[in-house]
Length: 146
Image (cartoon, rainbow, N blue to C red; front, side, top):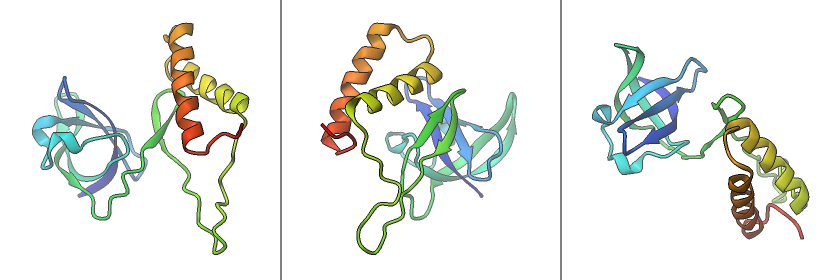
């Protein structure tokens, strides 16, 4: 069995991709190869699977949940490659060593750069709508300071 994380899954089309934890190329995932309910699939879900040679390359089969799955989603960078989010180690005094609280302007700048790199075909209006929604979300989770 190979361990990895779901990169994306399109339920309407019935397929997606898994990024193996060993850093090798993403593996095709088809709904017919799931041993778990399709509704459980989400980006970042830790899974175990067998790798087979398919018609168009590597494909996953016998896909099941990995033991002790955290389900933390991957971050997408430039070309859409999955890179795990850094996980802040809890310090004994409760301090998060990797926790940066950004100003709303810094946060919006970072979001804009990520959107432009990940989805360059977005329109300006779409970027503004996504930024506003993410800023609200960030404020609710304490990721920005006012």
